[in-house]
Image (cartoon, rainbow, N blue to C red; front, side, top):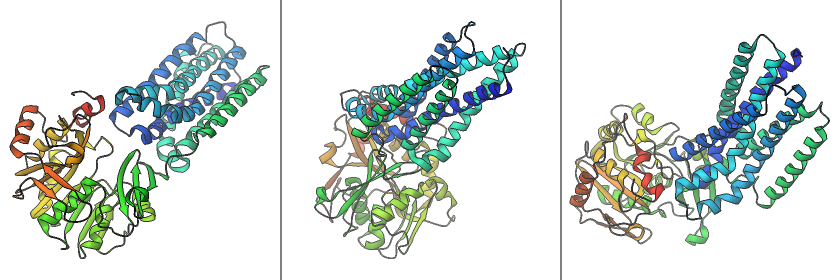
Length: 521
């Protein structure tokens, strides 16, 4: 029988809203996974692939559930069941994340298979169930508007696509910032449940749908409460990061705290002594600056990334009169450092720019020069490609004073760091001296390290420092760093056939894939 205007609008709204919810889950999936696996090309690849696989399977199943003999009542029942499944599986994703993350990530799987397995366990079923809805409703709409098949099908497809766009925008620009990732998933599960009840309202099976939703929801609520699935792991959930602040005093024996962005510890600050640098690579930057520019003298420095503002805090106190410019993309990171890590953004000589570091550097007056540029934009095992390209390095070289230098930290394999080789080769296009340093307690001798995760610190300048290849800490914790033998490093870089990184071609994730896969890239 022909559709009433109310039925036609109801079908259209249901397709729009359910499609929006499906894309909200896809966007929020990245934030949910970030505290456990970080954010990288591999994480987003797994999320997009799994969600598309679920939607594809759901569309196929929805087509099987919409044969010619299915009338509006039976179709509504099937839509209600699919939406109830979407509600329950969306809620379950929060619980399964807490239950499965440690098992899969610590179970001996390499990083990429573990990410794919975890993503599949969490987000395949929510996408599959919501994918069932559109084919059934489209079939019912076509049946109810005879002679207008093409127009009806096109309208339903358009509404589904518009809903997906709306869900993407709402998740990215509103929901995560307003109610957080956990709150967003709970909201989506509630919307699915409300739609399921709406489709079951006129059917005698509505009591069954209510019972299933209550039983499953109650069971998951109890289980989730037991594993704290509905508690956000973030102290602050910003537009960019899950920001966590933890007390570190037990490890240091002094009042201290750390900041973690997603699942990477980014900064450790001491309350009473800003110059006490706990992170080895931060400590190295402090020591190499002391060696090259002297202790306690004012300096001009540009920081690519702020994090916990550990070095700016140390130098604003220990080097009075310094000119310190910090480019930190996320204002919430800066606020967290001020609120919890004893950072004083109003300290004399300090400027904080909340924008991309490359754009911030380019926007400074042309005559502005620095003694040091420090790149600390590594986020877990990924780094923005535009911050390691030759074009950006040329901008940095042009901003350095005579005797100035550029320091950047790099996370890569210890034995065959392909990305490090590419970065050294790229920096060598514009800097006469490019050195790679490591903490031997972490990596062993440079060039002979293990195949696991290693933090290198690269120093690029117009001239080397003329040292003996060993740097011993003169302040703070007792540490020493070793320089990779320049001749050996040059030979390894040449033998690796690594590319010169550019704005047009900077395959950072591919070069670092060996670290994720646990094998040669």
